[in-house]
Image (cartoon, rainbow, N blue to C red; front, side, top):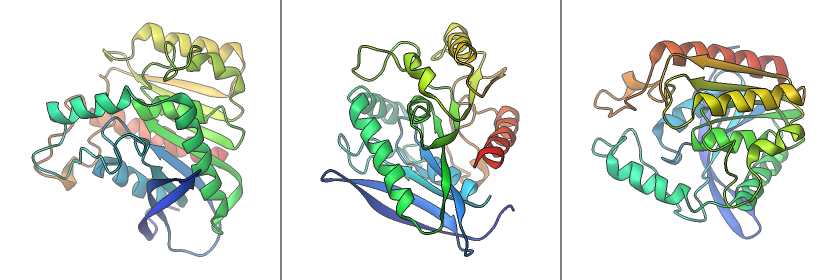
Length: 262
């Protein structure tokens, strides 16, 4: 089932007094569907993330992209569709500034609130939820994978997994043993932000704990998936590392992951 009709909306997900803005895309068809969470890069829930959310929904999933900067910078996006922003130095500076302020327990709490929201939707299957994220969101997706409700995770070039955990002393990689579902991790061999050593450590830890996983590497740089919708925005200041061949192949693996586990 591909390219089915969907509708989209912006919702607020409650979390102990906080209202988390989230972009939702879901099939118009009646029935129940697997659910997927999409976690953004440091640029917020921008047009690229919204497009990815819609693309996954068109495969037959209920998909939600929560704003992980809600506490720090409500409404922030460096939106691809804004001609003068895109991947500008100012957007990078702001996104990085907010990234450096997030806290592990708060992120985990927001993930759990998003899962709880999905479970309230009558068209969501009860069998499990998927997650996908990029860069900052790739790390967030790896965190989400440690929760029992998560059955399939696609983590793209997640930064800091081996060295940090957003204010916690124990890096996120040390929680790998808690992953119960399948996880695919995607890396570029020329990534200057996530080294080969780091992704090899992740692979070793996944093997050590016998996690159902794949580690997929491309001759590409960091952010190779960003820019998948360049044709939609002819003036787009796309990510300079966008690699169309790597992105297309990775997308096939993402579909495989979700189809086999959700």
